[in-house]
Every structure is written in structure tokens, then in C-alpha cells.
Amino acid sequence: MTGSVFRNKRGTNPLLIISLIIVVGVLLLLPEPASADRSFSQDTDVAISCNLPGQVIEAGTTTTFDLNIQNRGQEINRNIWCESSDIDKYGWDVRYKEGDTEINKISLPTNGSKSIKLVVDTSSETPVGEYALRVHVGDGWYWVYITISETHIGEKGTLQLSVADKDGEKIKGAQVAIIRSSDQVNIDQVMSTADGKVSTDVAPGKYTLRIGRAGYKDVEKKDIQIKGGNTTDAGTVMLEKNQFAAEITLNSPVITTTADTKPRYDLTIRNIGKGDDTFRLGSENLPQDWYVRYEEKAAPGTDISEVFLKSGEEKAMVVEAIPPHDVTVGDYRIPLVIDSSATSYAENLTAKIKGSYELKVYADQYQYSVNKGDSLTFSIRLTNTGNAGTLTNVSTVISAPDGWNADISPETIAGIPPGESATVKLRIVPPGNIVASEYKVSVKVTSDQTEKSDDFRVVVHEQSLIAIFGIALLMLIGGGVYYMFRKYNRR
Image (cartoon, rainbow, N blue to C red; front, side, top):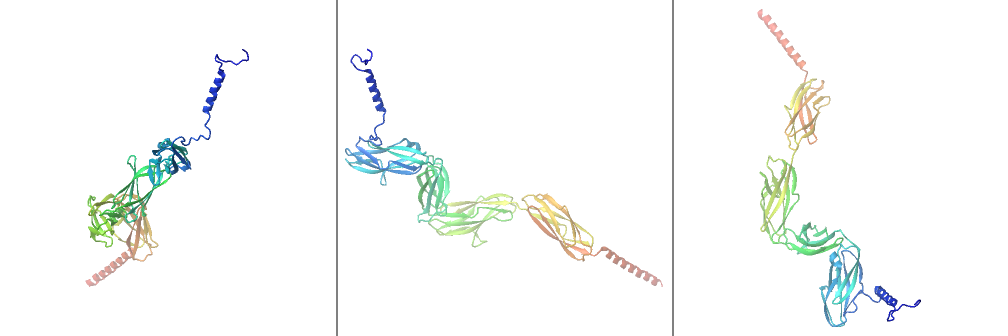
């Protein structure tokens, strides 16, 4: 029928049924009214509340939520736990505490209440963002929220601690081994400063610290958590002295010298044990033909083989390493052994024998004669007697009195290898009007590595013609006397 509403046999309108289904579906999809708060459980015996359920912190820091727990039903004894996928994902540490006591259960009478703390220790690797944690007490639950405002992904953290003895004295030079807890790998080792402090950067993670020093008993601190961008203070570590112990100090265990010089090392022994002790001084496995001697620094030249020290006393000594006369260039290890009542102390010295540059200047004689106006020629021999290497750019210079002329051939020699020689010819001409006498002529030979000077004496004589004339005159006089003698002898 036109204009009529279609009905089924029972008189029900199909359009009305479809409309009702649509309305119900829309209502199911609509959000709940604001009054229906789903941040906590409502229809349970346990009610949980928090005044500050949302907190903003920096990654790697610890935050605390103050929770109030109420029991609206029968007396309860319930477990406490926290639910969040972020706890395991980023390695957070979550715990409940009442005062200083960590708890995992709570007991409340009917209508009773209690305040506890939820402590959340975040990881420095947590990215920036908001994170939700669901607190559970029995069948009651409550949502709290943490917003990370700054992350420290990829950053190292700072480890700090102090080392002291039982008397409170700061310990210098204590070794701190940083051992990763997950695989027991020693990732670093640092030493305490003069004030007993240690401060070093470490990758985030959980570590065991092993602290020790010669003369003290080792101490371990476990479960030290390092967070990137944050400082972890491991507190003060107290070390206990051993009964017998020593501290041996070398000012410089490595000395460089030439073959003709004996290396000398400053050594101090300090008795840091509780008891008095005698220390025997020696060495072992020395290089061939080497020898070691100890002397008290306050009494040079006196050999000592042992020293007695009371607890807390120290003695300054000098260790002299004596090489053989024919020692060659190289590095030599000098092992020292110092024995005490309880243990032996080994110290390794190093003697670095370097080559020396030596230049010798020789001549056949050191005094020459020359007549006025004549020239004097002689040779000098230059020898490289060192063992360090070739003498390069070897030059010779003559220093003579004013008016003298001098020539050198050759003036410069490119190089003289070790053990080899070169010859230089010198020509010296004194002035013609010089007074006959003895004069000094100096020769200075220089190279890139060393130099050497030597002096020669030159005796200047009168001209040789005067002497010849005198001899001739004497011969003439003698001949005349002989003639006269023969003439008058015949008569």
C-alpha cells in the first residue's frame, strides 16, 4: 500500500530494530563519562591513592611516589607489586618501602590505612617520553606516571669513592679494579690520588669494585650501579694494614746514560706494616757481567745489604747499576729483589745505554819549526772514536797570531763513520818581519754532533841565508889562517 509503513506478520517494524542496533553500537563506542575515573580500582576492598601521581624527572634519577593504602573490607594480608612493560625494557629498579625498610606485603585491619612509598630507579638509557606504572596491592590497583624530560643515552657516568685506613688516614695509590657484574670482566683500573680520592668515567651498568694496595687487605664492594650523565658515590672504603708490608718508591726507574757512566736510581723503602721488619736488598737475573750495589743516601760510598725499619719508618737509598767496561748500546733490564719477613718485592729498573760521539785530533808532533817567510805544512788526523754514529759536516778552523796566513785542505769533510779517520792538511805561513820565537797555533774541529780543539807550537827561526853567510865567513877566515900558516912555515 502506498504511503504505509511496512510491518512483518507480527506487526514489528524492521527499520525500528535496525535503528536500535545502531544506537546501541554508538553508545558502546562513546567514551565513558568523566566521572568514571579508571586510574584506580573502585569496586575492591583495597583503595589506593596518591597526591602526586605524575612526576617529571631526568633519565637515570630516582623518584618516589607516596601511596596511601586503605582497607574497606575484612582484615587483609596482601602482596604488593608493580606492573609496567617499561621496567624490564629499560632496566628500571622498582621497590616499595616503609621508612627505610623494603617491603613486598602489607597487612591492614578493617578500615585500616597505611602510607608506603613506591621508589622507581630509572635507567639513564630511558628515552624522553611519558611512562605508566600500575601499582597493585591485593586486588586494588592504581596508575602513576613518569615523564622523562632529558635522556643520557650513550653517555658515561662518574664513579666516585674515597680510600682510607682504619685510623682515617687517606691512602694514596690504592688500586680500584672496576669489574662488570654481568660477565666479571675487569673493564678499568684506577688509582687513588694523594687525598685518597677516586673519580673516573664508567659506562652505565652494574659493577663490583675491588680495592687494594700493597700492605693492605683487599676489599670488595658489589652491586655499584653506574648511570650515564650521573655521579655515583660509592662512599669511603676502609683498608686494613697487613702485619708485615712495605712501600717501595723509585723516583725514576728508567735512566738513560752513556757507556762510561753508571746509572744511579733513587729508591725509598717505607715500612707500612703493623710490625717492625728487616729488609734484605738484592737482585736477580742481571744482564751478563752487570753488578748492583745499594748505598744509604745519607752515607754515600757505603755498601749495604739489609736495612731494619720500625713500623712507619722509611729509608732513602741509591741503587747503582754497574755495567761491564765493554757494554754496548741498548736497553738493559735490572731486576731488584727486596725480601722482608712475609714477602718479596720485585722492582724492575731499566738502563738505556746510548752511544756517544767522540772526536780525537792527532798530529805526528806538537811542535814545528819554520824560518821567517817560509811556510809550514803538516797533517792532522781526525778519528771518530765514538759509537753513536757518523760525525757529519766535520770542519776545521785555525786560530793563529795576527799577520799569519793559513790554508786548510779540505776545509769540510762530509762524514766520518765510527772507528774511521780522515786526514786534513794544514799550511801555515808566518809574516816575514816576525820576531824569531815560539808561537801557539790552535786548531778547532767541529761537527754536527761534537767538537774538539787542540794546540800546536811553532818555532820561528831567522832566515837560513844568514846562517849560510856566517858559515861561509868562518870558512873564509879559516882558509886565510891556513894559508898564512903554510906560507910562513916554509920560511
